[in-house]
Image 1 (cartoon, rainbow, N blue to C red):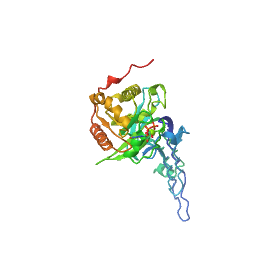
Image 2: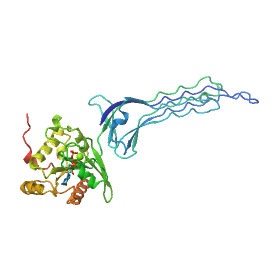
Image 3: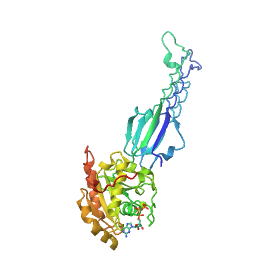
Image 4: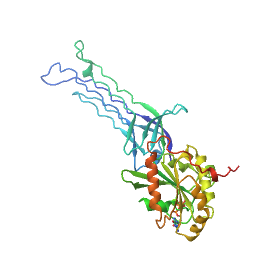
Length: 351
Ligand SMILES: Nc1nc2c(ncn2[C@@H]2O[C@H](COP(=O)(O)OP(=O)(O)OP(=O)(O)O)[C@@H](O)[C@H]2O)c(=O)[nH]1
Ligand SMILES: [Mg+2]
């Protein structure tokens, strides 16, 4: 998946103005009638909900909108150049300038069909009609079309996610996502079934929430283990992280601390985000047994903990309600949550 790309954009050149004189029977001294050139088209970047990464523009680094047509006689204006629209995912930032340190975010496309004009087309040149004066009634000149704007921009996608489900392989992330949304990710009893982020939508009372399941994190993901940690990009804008733990694993606490380490190692202040713990597979007797052992420690943590079965649905509604509430609370809040106090289980980094 491609999330950052630098491209060169150019608006179309305006069409040249036309030099022409009206020549008609019975109309002596018809005068100039050369029309203006058409304006060049502009390059527009538009966010679309049905685009998930920059793969669309993978093979090209430069884009140019259409040129304006020349003006013609009879005062006809040249055709306007065609605009070029580049579609990108919702959550794409459009950044001007490629010199490190000099970059400025020009637009943050956060809604469906939101767009920004990045390189305007040049204006068409005036036709000779416009040069006529009392002194020079038959001008032989017309203006040239202007060149379009040229701009180097960086597109960077920070996916718009409200709720991000994070967990170890086989913890049941896909099962949970398919229970709470209409997304249908593959579910299987082997690790790394999900290799790309999967997104679903959850209806709330007033708004919808975007839920993303990202591929499993394992210990050392930030060092490239497993599928790596790049998918945590989907968590950067999330209002809440659901850390999904496999209740049937004998090492629930260790897995939690590994997830926390990976989140902290990713950077981007992810460790300050609100999170909810969900211990899954409570329909299995062995999970109930493991959980009864670690429950006192889990309940001590300063984060909400839910005990669920994504397969049977037990406890899932409560979890989802809590997640929605958390997201709603952090919208608009500047510093939504204090860093949670769950450093207890964080192991020392390995060499
Ligand atoms: N008994 C039980 N099994 C579950 C539950 N949730 C998931 N599973 C099973 O656990 C296995 C893994 O489930 P997935 O939903 O694919 O897990 P995942 O976390 O998406 O796994 P990856 O995509 O491979 O990382 C599947 O065989 C599921 O049927 C649950 O609540 N109870
Ligand atoms: Mg999965």
